[in-house]
Length: 603
Image (cartoon, rainbow, N blue to C red):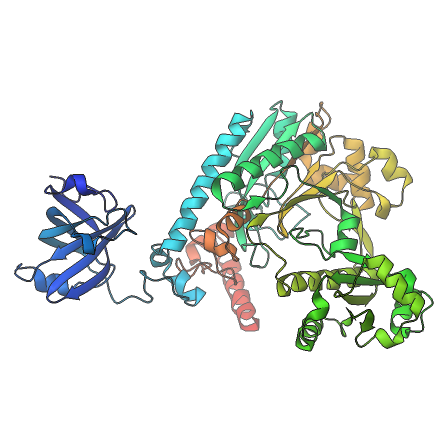
């Protein structure tokens, strides 16, 4: 007989009754029923109930064994009586009468229970992540992650894509987030960078003649954590294709997303051909470039209604070049005053001075600002917002961009407060026509707003003849339920356009040649038109699992402060390693350590 198991803990059924079997696993739960000990034994595959009778020599040892200890048992499979069958377990019709018992690995007292889905501080869970991963919900999330990767590979290879693995040690880029730098021992003072994305490599593969590329790529960015963004590292489904239009790429991504969400989640996909929303329209209607379109409540521009209004707050916003925007919340007029007060409190928490509102009840407009409105303005509001009796209007006024963003957050708040968001839906959309450049008010200069390697709409002519802030790019985002899954673009494959685009953003030709030498050279030897995208793998799994936090679908994530509490990273390195990094210069090592101490004190 095998030293550990003849069967797994999820395998035994009634047809194995009277067989002698050996099982190994963790003590999931113990129960003492009138002197008879019941142990639920768990392994990766499931649970089996083991029964230890008090006349066994190992009964006391089995009674003392702690939960999560690893044991091996040998015994006979017996059928449970009808009244003791557990219909919720696949093995619920049998149990194993234990004849031999061995503790393979005793467990200490647990920092939190594994056999219950209770809330515990995240830092505790991450410190003991190996225990956390034994819990059913997290275990299922990691298995879902594996199935997502398998299905992605199956779909992509079936569509003719070739899987690649691009370098991890590469050069630093002047664009994007902060790099993670790796010092070179052989070249003191020089550094590799961990890739923020395989952007240049996948474009180089297109110039090398490979037509369809993909990989589930590790990416490294030194940026802050969010609920939907892991600090430090993440994975993306990196895709690039040659000789394509934007429409060609959309077909491939829509097919992949539909396949993943159809086969791996219970969510209903609203539309398998994703609607396309221009960037400026998204900002005006939803206040964000990642709109949640599972519900309405789109913003309406009512600036013209108040252009000559006696209501000074709204008229003043328009006179200063800003906007007055309104959200029509159907049926909200019947809500209590507390509902409106809570909405205003939310708006103030987001930086607003207040939140004006009007309720349409019994043919009248009621609320704090209703008394300031003329009949013409009342009719103008109804026409602009399609409001009817029983609806409520919520207003934002001020600089256009600030008002859009603020009211966009109010829109999501109202969607939740009015229970308009169906969690069983997956509503995808494309946001298209991003501006190529944006104005940085802090640095008083034009800079890239999205991806510097994108093709401007209109090519070189647009860059030479249009105001840079009017130039649109062939850039696009795919969004699901208000979560941005990916950015992508049709790439710029011409060196003359590349030079002009970077020149507008403040980089001269020499910078382009020095910072992007590989692309610069490759584009001089026949580069095909190409484009790509990189949906965030972790975010996709998060949505498939219905988890609000991305760390719940990553086996060993960093915490919100970019620390690995289990492995103790980041950590200091010893003098020997520093000597390697600093060219065996002991004086530099001493100065470096002193500087670190001072920096630590400041922090």
